[in-house]
Image (tube, rainbow, N blue to C red; front, top):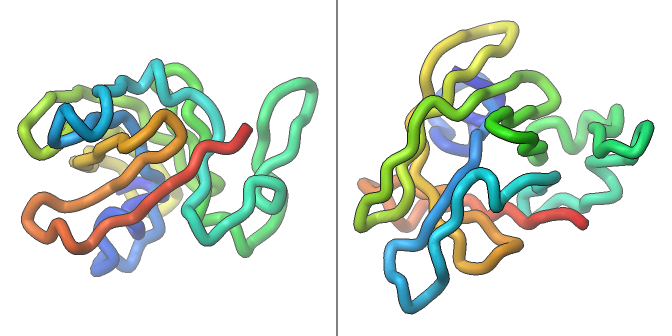
Length: 144
């Protein structure tokens, strides 16, 4: 399990990293996206980009702010990094519900695959949801 699992499965007691790649469940809402199109820094909608990230040596890095540890991540290639764990994209599969991805994650507490389903309503928004409980979703916004 990785750092963002908390956002993907609130019943897990472990904070986990969410790896992100996405698509939409209906083509008329938005175009499909891949991890290569979702590079950069992302925050949960209740967080601020400036509070979560800073530029160091020309690259985006996490600020040492405990308030934003579980609300932000950085996608760099096939690597998705949270403040406490790192995931790599294992596989991805387009489905009618959205893009299902398997993230291979490692944190201080757990190591293993994490299945995630996402959609991208626009290029700067990712929505993580569970197809079995679509009313439970988490929205992330891209930082500039």
